[in-house]
Image (cartoon, rainbow, N blue to C red; front, top):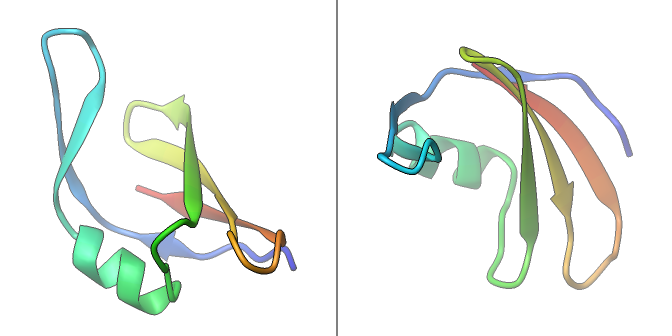
Length: 68
């Protein structure tokens, strides 16, 4: 199932240029029914726009979202 949705988060860049989500993560997890074992792949489209692919551990179904 593919859908386009947007969530706002606050993230900071670490010294190794990776991102750390500070605010909005709990809401993102809740609204996407993330469970232990699910995998989120974050692709940076722009500094303030990320494409997120969720791979469900149990269902093996990919869902695609945008986080900004």
